[in-house]
Image (cartoon, rainbow, N blue to C red; front, side):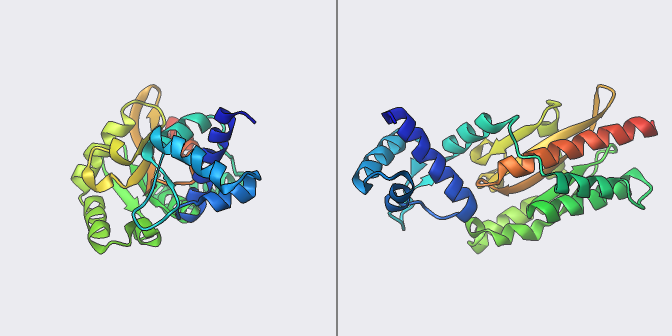
Length: 241
């Protein structure tokens, strides 16, 4: 294994572990996985840190991925996400259940998405209204254990007019959109990732769906959920209009 391959593998381990645990990752843990000495791993980590892909929290000897690392990771997995057929089936059952109006369907679907992903979900209706669900999930993640930080984020989620303006801009590209950390326009969302997807009638964008969660989102799992929901909404609207 050459040096570049080792660096890539070390970064992969740090990303995967941080997504799962939210904790800094130490050289000894990586050493046990890769079968290399801790000293060798520390040298590799130092190089990766110099390149801006990992950083050291003040209270730990371990390292965590930076936003730059998460952007690299997200770009590398798009199109290779995990499609959980059970979760997709659950979404479909929700969309075609006893609910009759489009708004009823979307509100219930938003609740299901929040429950499935454990992130805050939202939908934008064709009449330019936004509905959110599961804001309380924010409090489940240690990234938001600071009360002031959590309150600011919850307040931003409660400001529906500004939230709608931001999300309308995100869905305006007509494609799946992933904003990581400080890529988000509003400072209160700088510790979050936001995934959005638009739904259409013909070629016209009429609304969108998405989730808001920590930067260490389980992207491989949740991206196809949002993509599928947006596609299903487009199909439903095509039948209605």
